[in-house]
Amino acid sequence: MSRDFTGIGRALAALARSKILDLLMDGSARPAGELSAAAGVGASATSEHLAVLLEAGLLSCVITGRQRFYRIATPSIAAAVEHIGRLCPELPVSSLRLSRAQRDLAQARLCYDHLAGRVAVLLTDSYLDRRWLETESLALTEAGERGFLELGVDIAALRAGRRQLCRSCPDWTERRPHLAGSLGAAVAELFQQRAWAHRRGSGRGLIITDIGVVALEKQLGVHLPA
Image 1: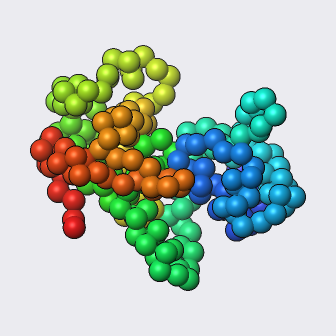
Image 2 (image 1 turned 180 degrees about the vertical axis):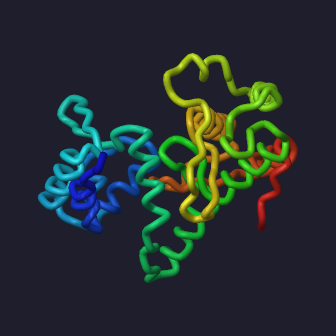
Image 3 (image 1 turned 90 degrees about the vertical axis):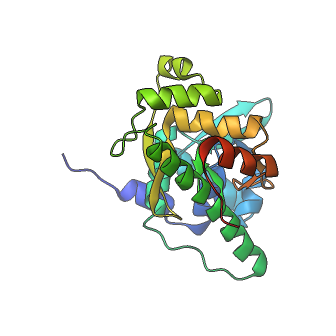
């Protein structure tokens, strides 16, 4: 069965919409005003861009009181956007601030609701080295179930959910896969709950804290480059 990609192509064919999607790739729900500032366009143009993304099914809108909040429609949409990111050139760097921001995103960030960047790839390598995950599919092994339970991840609760437990997600900065699925999301939540990582400003970048660096080394054998 052939598919018509033109609708999605048109929805993505604007830099402002690209910036809106990128900001929402941290799994957040944000008002139009915040998205307008990130996209660098006015309120009227933002409304038009959001309408295009909503019509294409890329975003969903939640109304809370008088406020409208926009977010990536589903985890599968976020995964598709991350896949497409591997095919896209990076935006040119025009300032030292942007250069640092790109470097920071490459180190650690959220990809919808799971970890991405160099840290996530190194973590996935560690899971594979410890035989917690199968090499090809990233499926959870018995050793992995024990290991993640020791870390504090409730595997039984994750299995009871409808979402796929483990999934390979291509990392667009590292060009290698990192762990996604409900297990990847649980690990990202654990990192933030234990203050191993926290948000870098209002974007999707993450800062690995000092205690996070120690935890990565002692509990998972991950040594972050200086």
